[in-house]
Length: 296
Image: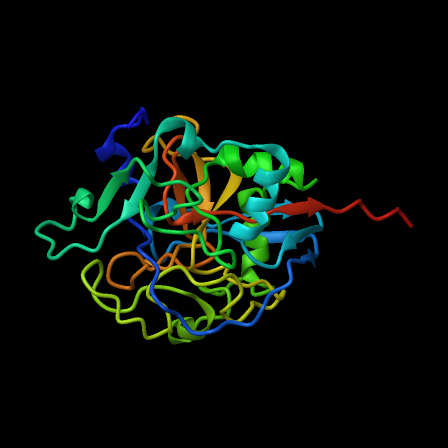
């Protein structure tokens, strides 16, 4: 492995969620990639009810923008690579981090018990050697550099944290979740972990791995998977001294967000994304900023 970031330091940043080898999943409706217009306005960000890094509650102004209805898929990323020859960070630096179901866990604070660095992991092989990227699933094993390159090629951009959180709230400014305040509704709105993390995922929501993009109910703006499935990169720099330099904010949680250990499939949730540690639980979606309305 040539990735410079130390194993322990990087894996400690991945406490919230992860990913694992694909398993058979229910059929999902075909989703046509599209952009959905989000109105500008004041967004209330953060929470003081869950994790310390989400506080304080604050407001930000955002202009109108359009955002992908789903995460960028492997099929979309493959088209980008075919057109540009882009070589991802994982391919250049020698792999990425993958989640591995442990037989048992002695110490929940030792994340190396369920995370591994795999030299074969990259977007084509998201869970390491022997895994294959499903065209319909979100692309993972990408870094901020890779996501920015895709966005430039597509004539789009990555959202800021404020833009992303505004879109994720779906018009519900003060709700804990993108669908409201009923956590039980997560079963139909967010691909997340059921059971005791990290030993057993019961798959009560129909999935024991990353779901194809768009399988779960959309929020009030018509956006799928703004909660769970995969964490999503933003352009906003991480603002706390507990992550490697160059880290950016990731949002939304992933399918391994469990109620007993994470509970980060919420708009206010935020974690740092390491600039040189691609993983099998972080992806992205893109935006286009809309022209300002003419005065009068």
